[in-house]
Length: 298
Image (cartoon, rainbow, N blue to C red):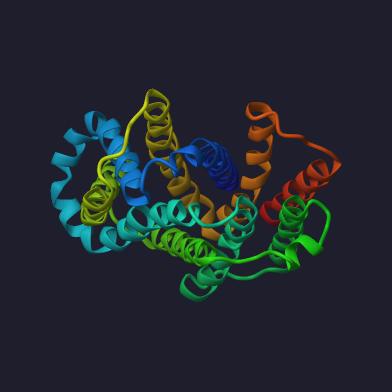
């Protein structure tokens, strides 16, 4: 039994890491799309791609589990609104008026919100080891963002986009808590298909308003490839892994692993965009990974 529990925990940690790695690429790929496609429209294209990609594999199971779907809808609707409709749309909206530095800093607040909400709603204990790992990982993220100069953190100018990103961080934390509390009997593929489809329904009025106000976006071959990535990778694959991780190790530990997002984004930027990497990045990586290992060590 102990070996089985350890294996399940390791699997959950690897799933959380996998989701975070893909999401780190999402920030780089989606950055260019924010200038040409409106936020809700981009979210609609992203989740529509994920839904259509999953549909051939889950439609038969969804039909056979239709009674369970109806029973689970009261729990799925708030998860869909938070995790599909609102979170990514607000993130894309924030990117229009906030700097990458501000967004990176605010994104690191998500694990803090997850741990606090898990304490109040799931009665998860705040152990000394978990808090120590949280502090070390947060220090590593702040080191990465500030470049080793604390003055950069105190001199930052905040905009309306920063408020949108702060709201998005709270929303994703709440989504993670709801996933942990979900007790439906749906298979993973049917759960995701229902989640995506429900979230898309609530996106339609928002995206429709943007289309009326700004007109249809121009989908270039590059934009089409980026939409496929965020739809099939950053939506379908990442959410499947993240939900499995939350179920296996809980939202607090999964949230701590989310701290590695800036680390993977930095590596991707170094490889794909030829951005520099120095000793600050290595020291930050050591803090982030060390804090995660301390907090998740069984």
